[in-house]
Length: 317
Image (cartoon, rainbow, N blue to C red; front, side, top):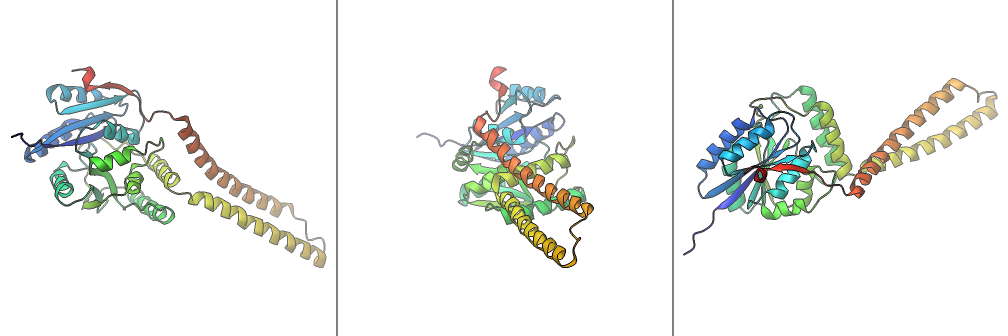
């Protein structure tokens, strides 16, 4: 009688300058893998054009442990491209996305796997219940972002959501079918649907190294989400245009009436300049919104690859 094949879980780990944390992550993953019976693992590191010894650390692990695979990009393409590459090259029945800094605790994997395997869920996602240790200004803007995006988008994002999640093959294939160049995975995961269970845990500090996400990078990333999953800014620019047309008509009528009644009251270059500057600023603002959507459309129509691979573990074995 043929023995039953073990389920294979692929762990996708995007990395950018994570030389310091990779040994800690690998040690923790080996520990968790040894505790999960009748399950096989592959760890797929994705080097997003790192400039330190990240690639060398991946090479070393892949030579000593056949469960470790890696993909190295030709340059830095961003975390979204790294996650997409990992999902595209993972061979497991179940695929998890995790950060290497251990802010995504591997100890949750047994519970996540059991939930998807036995409870009928397609994925188990994680969210931070607290933002302890995070700068207050970042916490404030994160809360504002989630409130805004959930009001203007048809896709609802869970506050505090992490990229850390375990998915079955069916959901991963659906995510990969959205091969758009401008990606926001948290939104894509919600857009494809499927049955998802959320696990909450308190914020965990990095085990080593420093975060690669500055406030400015997070701000640009939030704009990517808004543009990718909402057309509300376009409607807002149209509303601005309509309101200022109404105000202009009202202003013209007011000036004509005042000139007819009091005479000589239509002069005043200072107030005119202020109005022109204000209206011009609003016009530039709305044109900027249109430009953002146009630029994203331009990049999509180029059909450029999301990433380019310079090396994998097969090149060194």
